[in-house]
Image (cartoon, rainbow, N blue to C red; front, side, top):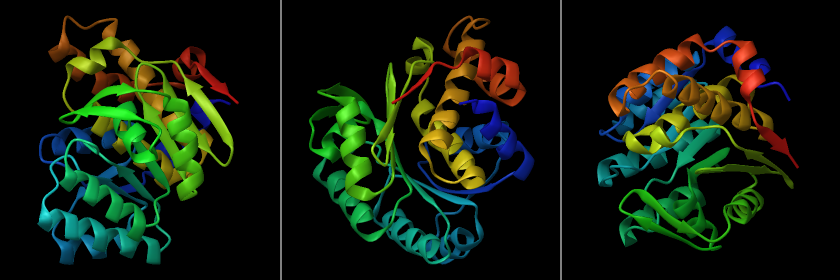
Length: 262
């Protein structure tokens, strides 16, 4: 596959990506959506979020700093998105870290039809029951990320993406192993949230599929590689990440992508 095909669709359609996300990374998520080619909106008041979700290209739900108010907004917006054929991307940040987060994740997955679940290896291992550990909102160990992705994709009829040093994406009995990225991604807060925003842009423009989600994650990770080549540390790396994704061209993403479809 050529990831640039999906990148071009995003840039050509400028999908409206509605976020109910966490306050630690909300500005970064908005900016990375713009750099990917989308248009972000961040509405978390329930009465506002339902109207916005209904007319968006995609809804991204991120429970990084979830509370009872935003939890209610997530459920209402998710149901509004479902009623209007808008795909939902769910990032279960910190699932497995507390009973409250486990309850939130379980409720969202039971009451909202999600098109994509994207989380780190620990979170997805916990959600799938395959096995995983979470430290706060950081991934701990995970027994089998590929199996976690496959099980969640099968159970919820969606695309499941497990991120880590190697990324695993599964959908409909098929899978992909993605090998791009850079260690500096682990030195900047919010990179996982930003990946979900990019996945939201690609899902909004191209639909939810093994290929579109793999292209989104790869675009982000190739941009990380390009930024790292010029970065002096986490600060310049983060700034360069936005620039690299914004300026990413077909030759770079297709030439550097390491995607193994199975």
